[in-house]
Length: 233
Image (cartoon, rainbow, N blue to C red):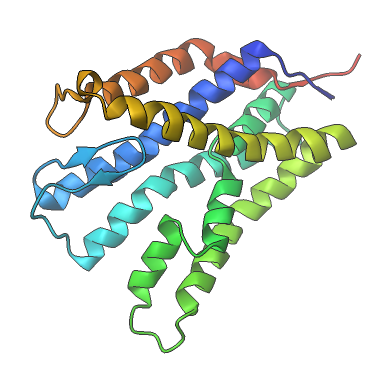
């Protein structure tokens, strides 16, 4: 097999990537509304529960784990599709499902002592004598949930260039692109009155339009995610 990357695939990949980032935060936001009984506010890098709401510790764990749960569901769906018994198209889709949720970003966040998973561990081990147990537990949880699919993806990559150049690039470059887009484009636009109008309470119009555009593009280009690998003649 060979790797086949072109503009159609990259459009499908990044459409799904930006959509997933939005879905991750939307899940946090919507789940937080359940114990609060009201909606808070949502931006591009943050979300807050409605004013005055302080969820219980159990609900906080559920809220903070709900977002990454979507990432891990997709990662492990990708792991399943990468089985050798699957067709080339299915394995291609599996590789895409693994890469889009950015498992490397979850690992890097846990390594730095951050991330949703580590935050939950800090709540669970708040009274532990060892102050590092939360960070270690968060990192171990992330590694358990990401390393097996990453190993399978590495083994499925055809040739050393795909293994050591293309795969690392697709694991890391989207992180940089996302940070640049949010920090230098979306957040500055959101600070302007024109784009900060809220058609729904707590939800700026720009946030809605951004998510809906990527949803539409993902629907239109989704089949391209199965074209990453191609059979050699």
